[in-house]
Length: 218
Ligand SMILES: NC(=O)c1ccc[n+]([C@@H]2O[C@H](COP(=O)([O-])OP(=O)(O)OC[C@H]3O[C@@H](n4cnc5c(N)ncnc54)[C@H](OP(=O)(O)O)[C@@H]3O)[C@@H](O)[C@H]2O)c1
Image (cartoon, rainbow, N blue to C red):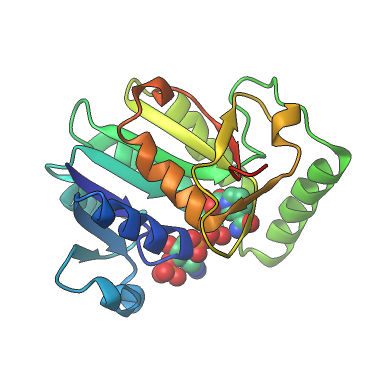
């Protein structure tokens, strides 16, 4: 399988590169030119396409011939960064490719998620801070996911809980809705978030699902 990882140089991205290589996949990674050196540990084992991950021409080139695309959606700035990344993947991935996107629990597909007061406060704070500083735009990630949900592609939107570093605890569990008691811990190791993203490429039960995940040990 040939997979493209968009946002490959980030923390989640590098874990996904490692998992994909471990599975024997051919890997193409997109990252900002200034971050290419962060992929040095994988030199010779993957192809790097330097460029903005929201640049449709860059994405088009990178996803060409790929059976799967793993896209890290991050709502940087106020210029629709995440929505442009998502749209480029939807537009240019080859027909039938598996598309797997990352985001957080705050994204809801059907409005059936149940959020604690603390999660609602966190989102409100992030939205307020983003408006004040211009550094992030939570609504951009919401727009990105809406585009994915409305597309007729073979997508999965993986909704991550709060993340920790540390050794793998195995494949995270998932539920359709935040608020399910099984998700109570609200913690996942980043390495396992990446494992779930990569495993989703070959898990057809996750097609057109938006799994909310937590670490395998709950
Ligand atoms: N952090 C959490 O606690 C958390 C919780 C739940 C879900 N998630 C989800 O997990 C995914 C990964 O999040 P993460 O926190 O682990 O981050 P991450 O993997 O480190 O990813 C950040 C990405 O954004 C890029 N980036 C950083 N600054 C940028 C800028 N100014 N302009 C454009 N791109 C920039 C990075 O590229 P460079 O390598 O070039 O810097 C990297 O590709 C996201 O989809 C997020 O919604 C995160």
